[in-house]
Figure 1 (cartoon, rainbow, N blue to C red):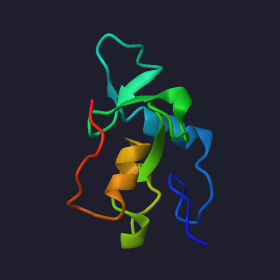
Figure 2: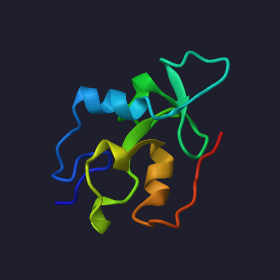
Figure 3: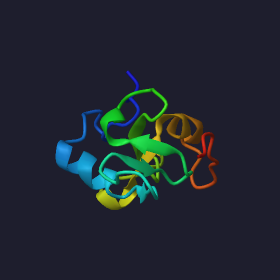
Figure 4: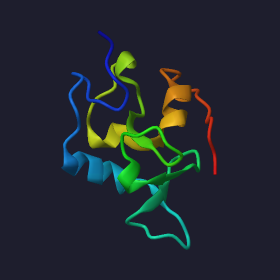
Length: 102
């Protein structure tokens, strides 16, 4: 069975402390509550409460260097990414492009 998007190397879920630490890596959006909205590295707006969902502001924890290319679960290798950008990125490391932007 394939590992689900937004999960650890072993397929398990990230703990709340890791989710929060990754969320904090998102870019603050001017004029929006930083506790509720951020931007991912593509500039797509994500919402804290939409973690793990596939809606307009849904986001996942992405492995910058993919698990398939021996990427780790270390916080330094994790980033918040809109779910559409995560799907588009796939394992195209390091030369990937964004699908959804602001």
